[in-house]
Image (cartoon, rainbow, N blue to C red; front, side):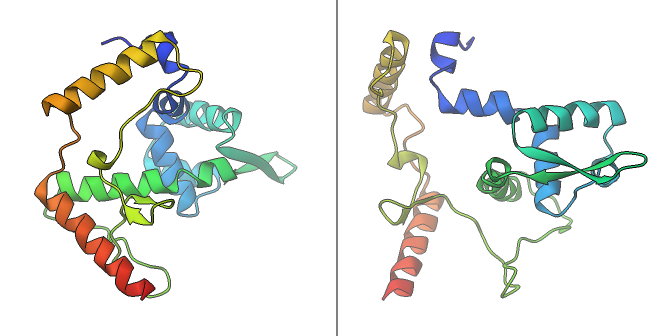
Length: 192
């Protein structure tokens, strides 16, 4: 289905993908979050062609995900630092890590995600700050905003009907329910 401009300009997911919607951009962000700053560090870590890396870095600076800073005048050399906007994509990278581990496992165990202070393994979850609980897809639905156009209303209505029929992704697998339940219990015991 082709995404129409009508919907995509109002949809936060479509706008986000227009900014970061390719694998190189997300991998550059991952490496920047792990301390890479210079062109050669990104290139060496990713094995990406110079011309492609140049284009991605320029677009990321334009989209204010990275900030270009001069560290040497002659010849001019630059570093790329994450902006606040870039840093706020960390949860996306963490959830992609978790999803990849869960759904695309390999025999080799090359990386582990650990807490910096305790050095113990961590497993990121999606958490609702307002209600103080983990979230799953079945916990949320879209609703039209105050500026919704007819296309948005039609999409929301179509999703509502799918939910009522039971053929939407709002039904939560048992493993996900167990994960959320365990996380909620752990959260409760921490707050006691």
